[in-house]
Length: 152
Image 1 (cartoon, rainbow, N blue to C red):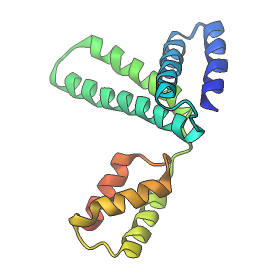
Image 2: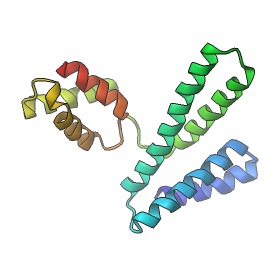
Image 3: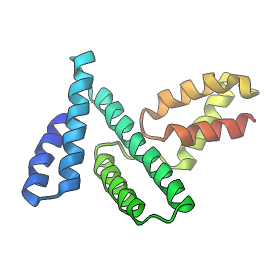
Image 4: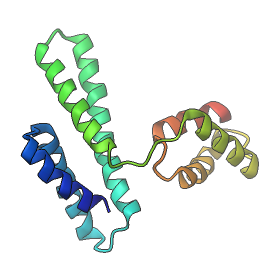
């Protein structure tokens, strides 16, 4: 399970004095513990959802920092971008291997054909079915963009 793996790697990161990994792993373990309050019997799939949520926060922060950096000339933003990137790299070690766009596109095409989706009104049905099939192995934003493009 992710919780045990993260605890083990936290000890290794502490011995290596890797400040970013230590802080990120502590945050991840804390998030997993909070999630366990709501759902004491967490499966590995539930743990993956917690990691995905934390990774998404890092990706969103990266987008925001890069946007701010392009609008302002601030050197401290570069340091924040670098830290968020390192945190994201630590978290990605706990996520399942991501599917390629081609693999996701095949699934989207099959679901659209199976459901008989014909327009944007079917987006929710298609998204639900596709996300159920990819189960954390594809970014929801990428899937959403692909579904909208195919149905639009």
